Length: 155
Image (tube, rainbow, N blue to C red):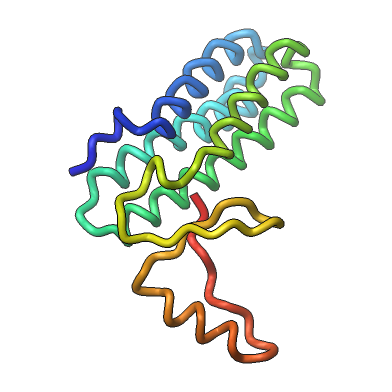
């Protein structure tokens, strides 16, 4: 089992979650079961998925949970955006939280993956990870005109 607490991605995600809980205490009471709950859930799903993936035996499971963490991070980013538009976040809180989201989104996948995975940079989507067992399938997809390549694993 991997030690998720030593991963920079988990540490940043844990801090982001803590800050989200702090700022959402100030949200209106009528939003307790609305955006407050949704934002908190999205935020704590990021470190929770990293932790759960770290406890999985296979690298494929690990990558799947890292992908879910990335999706939860995008969801957190959206709810922060909505909270700002609704006037629930101050400019200072907005700046701090979005900086944390951007820092977490920009972490190098090498910090959370074991050896055996290839990392490539795509200008449109950022850093992406490919599992070695999928390399032949991905490369084969690129050789066929009109056929989309197999999906990559973002983290």
